[in-house]
Length: 411
Ligand SMILES: Cc1cc2nc3c(=O)[nH]c(=O)nc-3n(C[C@H](O)[C@H](O)[C@H](O)COP(=O)(O)O)c2cc1C
Image (cartoon, rainbow, N blue to C red; front, side):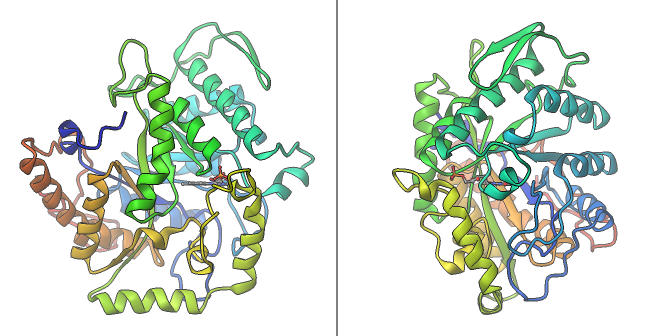
């Protein structure tokens, strides 16, 4: 399991990702100014800034229809591929709905993306909540827990086709017979195949992720909420024999954990809190309310009522992945301390969102990340180990015009 007191884990630096703004309207459903574009040119520059600012991953969103502040959307897999081609080190995680793809077609697509990018392609498998996207396309809309039955089979097909020759799998949703995909994914040390991320909060989501995902993404949570949220994943992983982070004898390594947080870093606590207040005061109320109604299709409608947005308030939903709950709001020092508190309870990766992506991703690398690394190094030393930054992206002096981040990582 993801042993939280594991000393070895404390030697691993936290990883950082950002949400790719490939849908219009930014990351908060509010009329507050957001200097964030959704077009490719904006995103290309952003991706280069991010990889030069110590970010290891970018996550695209999959959305097919106008909804809740996102009037326009770019398709996730093609957008991700273009970002991979425009960068050198960034890993781009493409969101994918199982109900929209055949897993064999996706497996092949991602292998090609992996070769084009020299081993940097990844996927985020999301089971979906926006019913109309499926029904208006004439696709079947499965009942909540059944969506996860299909998702689990889908992930097994992906992994099978990426790691085995003449792969066969028969199940309720997919039947694969003696299939070999050539070429195989790029052989990257420490990676068995393109990484499989997974987003979902309900009981069914947690159980599925525990069995088959490499990474579990949690919506924004406070410290106790995060512990509670990953407990089901950890239990399910343990029942499946995935006890260790490394994996052994053909077993999958235990899942790792990513947490969403909306970052508001300002010179003073007051300025940061005022910005949050303004975001919420200027919320687009009908859009947030409409979103709230629609997400009943997510876990809130299940028997135990435990789902991604089941306990979210109006304020929480202004950032549609509950990013304010993580409280990455305040001065850079305060945010860095908060981030390391989460590391102590099992977070391996932070997925971050901002009001003004290009400027704030660069500022995160320059002002927050060096403090995080110092705090992580202290924490490791106090536990009798060293922080190992050898495989971690290091900021370069140039961030494509968004300010200097020289000397970012304190080794
Ligand atoms: C980090 C993260 C990213 C997600 N990205 C998308 C997305 O791009 N498109 C989408 O339709 N749903 C996305 N989802 C939502 C999931 O598809 C799913 O509907 C949601 O997690 C509710 O699941 P639950 O009812 O099992 O809690 C994402 C969820 C998380 C946690």
